[in-house]
Image (cartoon, rainbow over all chains, first blue to last red; front, side, top):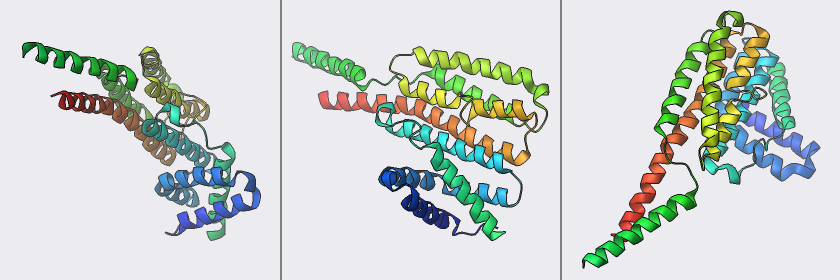
Length: 110
Length: 154
């Protein structure tokens, strides 16, 4: 079962992973991840719970995470306008990071 | 006195024209609003069937995708409409994970799980809401700009 500290734990893990492995891109990556996690916290918790309860599988979880990435792109377009944002600024490896961390957090709890 | 009023009106009118041109955002389009809303409703109806075999709903999905294709083409050719067009491109890209990506997955998997359909439907309907809100706000923006100019020149 996912508890209320899930998002915070996810944020901490992601931050540590960036510091350890992606120091060169740290400021940009951190900013992108902060935006993504802030907009997506509720959904991430819900999907992680569904995944932990085996109601969605790995592929479905990954699909939903990527859909959230696309949704955030749409929000950015709507809010800032096309000239002010770069679409797909968040890289695929960022989503992969979040995916792996969610799975590790769930595995640790089960 | 009459001349003064006429000059004021002409100046106001010029400001409005310059302003409309400089904002470079298309005005609210009732056709876009109506079509997007209709497509959203139709999408909901078809997505609810994604727990059944794709082959049974193939015709309906293809009809919907064709409707979307026509609207995207319409949005593409509308002047100063880059944002709406870019939003539709994200929604309608089979390689991304929103509307067209969902139908691609359904076609590939043949049947989708109820929880997955439920969650992805929320994502896609929220994306439609962003498009619809953006269209409505074009109207608000235009009104606000016009009112501002009228107030400035009254």
